[in-house]
Length: 206
Picture 1 (tube, rainbow, N blue to C red):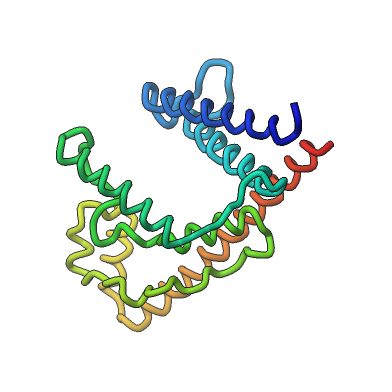
Picture 2: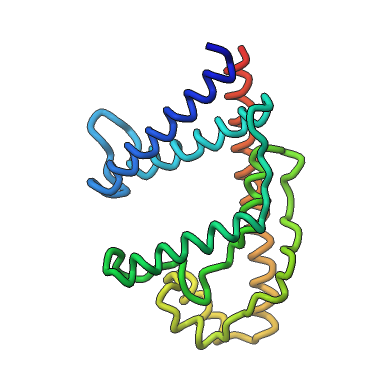
């Protein structure tokens, strides 16, 4: 078995691990810790997802596949998944608020996700996401509509309600600073993840 064949087999193994951890999570819950283990089902599921991303990055590094972070293609996939979710809701297969649907659901655009994935693979790409093409065309909901949105998170609603009681200029300025702080924190997390990817690549090469 060659190195590339090993990585391809590893991709299949990680896809199976994702399926196993997803089933475990659905049966026993996010916070359940399986017997003999120290971490929750959610932790194992997240790690399996990132392991698959790491394998994809290694395959790209060896030239087996090409990773092209096409924001337009990713947005079309997002839209298709949202359509699937709406269909599941209509059939009664999904109950309760759906944070992926509604006017406040697209804070993280496909363009921004593509940038984040690129940053995970390439440390030089880490930095503020450039403006998405046509970003100004995305309508911003009015505060009243956002507060009524059943898909809005509790944190978002409380933050918006508190902001609406403040001076609007001060609130907007503080929100801008908060967004930049959170963006910087996200980039640091991505850079740390990229460091873990380098370590795994070195171990695979060794």
